[in-house]
Image 1 (cartoon, rainbow, N blue to C red):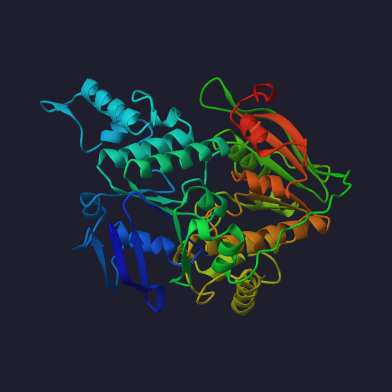
Image 2: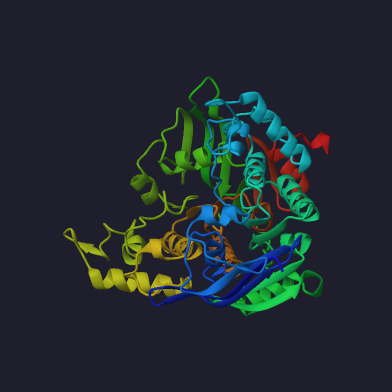
Length: 502
């Protein structure tokens, strides 16, 4: 047995994140750990990687008891972690990132040629092709992830932890990643993958551990289980397949006309974008991160000033108006970054639930806030959207990422505007919460309101959207009705391919 974690207990105050958790890993094995947000899977991996200390329990590597006080302790024992948000220096080369802190030197100077050779040899050995001379910020996301993996392999890691590794990848990049995991396992590396994408688990894992409420509730070989069974074990109930009835929608609600946003150089970030959202439909925007979809949403919602074109809702122009004026015109917004744009981490759940409502008569009179109504409102949202929290007075930064996301979704959905812009609404959350949020978006659409959905999850875009726009390098390169395009063709357009290349 390569790794054993025995009876691991981790508490945060009165909250038990891990309760006598046992995890084992064999050499050359791919182990998937799945569970809802707050199930304790990320905590147990943070303990293994030295980011957290357990209250009790033991860790053994090759039968030897370990005590990790930091990630560097874990790395010395051959444990590496590819985190969801890459830890790379974007203005440095691929080679410089991979060899960082363990560089080949000529005297006291960085030996550029030798480091290039070392990275090329490493790349060839593990069949992970990269250009050592490329600048990281110029590399697509899938290639940046490959650099992260090579960086860990350069540090001689035998155990590699992947935390939600496919969250920002295109379908083609996901295929490559799964091939990489299998190849690493064949070469003797041992893999632990934390994910909520059960189809990927069934594709790549040898064994699956299911966690719920801080405990291991099931452990099974992949060949002995199914997506349906794993879903049930994760949430304790059957996940229902959603059917979205087609609707005949004609009346336009949102129109974006010839929108232009200048960039730092000569090339525009957004170059003449035209799109619309009709009443009673969900419109999806599919695109690889960094192709202008984030800037497009910021322009529509007033977070960024546009350089040309118009944004119109209900026939009223809202181009370059303030965020507050745009919200009052009938647009609410679930931002893609829950902490930077969607919440104030140091504020309480009640304060975060109030945002956008603070000047309404229900919660404020003559500038004085009504604390009891604010508390009651937050409690109602927490209950309805199943946010796992101790109290509305708890700080939002103390929640798991998925539960913070649910509170933001609850706040924006409760405003009952004609249009909600949902950016990555289910990023990093579990299958039960995804089902609930999807149901809320579909319910809004079925009630005659509209949803503009931006997601890097193609399955989410394709299952929910009545129409799909594809964005590439700041331009709309395709528009498709539900069912008229498959995931492979959509993924091809997202990376700049032409349909004729299929």
